[in-house]
Image (cartoon, rainbow, N blue to C red):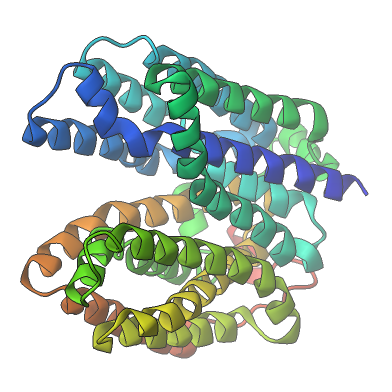
Length: 405
């Protein structure tokens, strides 16, 4: 079936692209050392600025690129983004100053956003009753890529050096581009909308769709909680009594377990949505994730973390896919690019705010980070249960959505 071929194309492109990105980005501090920066504070500053500027720019521009995708086609917008990544990553292999890296990362942010568009393309291609499955598959690929990328990147850097690693990453994006170019076929329905000029609405119209602002808050909260572990988890493992030489191993295992469980949650969500509503999946998953975060807050040894981590990751993955699927059911295909772009903006804001908040709280008490996560997830579960309107996953878009057109 053509929709399956489209799904294979965007899933493979997402996995390859996200893997390629994480081949080199975790080793950026080492690259600044190679460029002649030796002061630890300066390395941290350049690394923070360079890593932060791309998601910041993407958060601002993702809805705009989504709007362009609604008007001119998703495929060409993804190709545009991937082509820019090919050249930018290749250019990073030839920089000579730290500010060159920052400038290229800023430019990269201008053209990024293909992650949200590949989710949109998967949702567009799949039958309405398979939308959750399609979104979950692509999100699984986007989560597994970063989980595997650093391990592959470390091997590549060892073999060819840090500079040439950027060229290898450029090749990854070239492969992703070829997959989209040759395998993905823009759906006829979307092509008709482009030719007739339908679907030109403002962002205000998109925000008025049923549950949409609530779903933006859900995506923000889930990303905020999910990313809060990064700055403090190794410190917490050490605080629980792990020896210095075991801290990296245990922390790495926990991070990998979170990613793997999250990917499984993305995958299982479609089955859950066949049994019940997105409202119940999100609220129950948020409650389960709260239990996982709460176990972190009360843990006195690392063994309990091995139980809490997969529980937390599985629930976060399922809730995230359910939120995007719920949005896809109320947003007509003609404006889905703009809608998913706004969801991506909410996600990226959570990504940007979470480490800062965790850093400040962790300076006082690491357990307070997990307590905040627990309270946030419980509040999210209660809010979704009380406020969210249940929308069926089959049939046409809701009347409210149609009226906004």
